[in-house]
Amino acid sequence: MRDYEFIRNQFLLKHSVIDNEEYLDKYINFLINYKLDINESDFYTEKHHILPRCTFPEYESEYWNIIKLDYEHHKIVHRWLFESVNIRSYQKPLNWMMKSYKNSREISNAAKKGWEKLKNDTNNYKIWKDKRSKYMKNLSSDEQRRRANIFWENMSDDDYNQFCIEMKKYWTDERKQEKSNQMIEYYSNQGNIEKKSIESKSRWDSVSKEYREKFSQKMDIINKDKNKRKVAGEKIKKLWKDDDYLEKMKNRKRRTGKKIKIIFPDGEEVIFETMRDIEKKYSFSSHLIRKYRDKDILINEKDLKGNQQLSNCKIKTMTNG
Image (cartoon, rainbow, N blue to C red; front, side, top):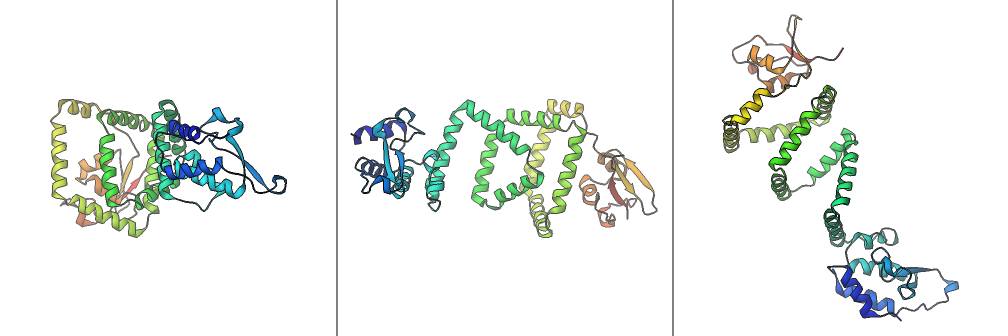
């Protein structure tokens, strides 16, 4: 004998939230009153656990919990079950039983619950994070870029603002320091520096002309925003007044990077260790060095402030060997 109250109470005890009690009642009542109208030997049937095995393993073998259903009814009760309680475990069977059934609200709700459950399980969450981190690190640069583009292209202005707020909350002083230490260790390896340089150049070369123009316009707007410039300037001034920061900058280890050569119109080549060396010698800013570096274009006089020594020169990155 299948007891309605007992089965319903089990669902209530197991799940803190019932998303649709009407469907839960429909689900239970249908199953406790279900009878096959056909001869089982003449028709395909499947076994169904009223209290699902995935969440009620203690009742897996109970005779009252197992019922034979024809396939169409089996699909329907699984749909009612998921509508009753939106969790991944109840949604998964629908992926192959009812592929056309896609309720975005219920699926989103199930994903949210699954995520909350995982995050509350400290050990499993750490294992998941480590696996995910390893997987993401092994993705190719092109695949990482493809995924990033999907993320940004589907983000509304409101979503972006909320994302910025969440990121500001996430980046505590401790996390900033931890990330800083990781970056210092990563870029202490010359091979990693070269790898990132190649990836950055490859990415920029691969984007369309329209993307570059849009990016340039956006940066132009940002750089001309007086309030942003003022805030940024005040932050920098405050940093340089901090004794600890001054000491840190004084003792920081400089990255060697790749050497740079200036090619003069007469063919003469002058090699420099860093961009800073070029800045000092020719009063030519780093952003202009990047503008001309490896572009195979001649330095325009309009970018030179009085010092015309670099007029019609080219800037190249030195390759190894």
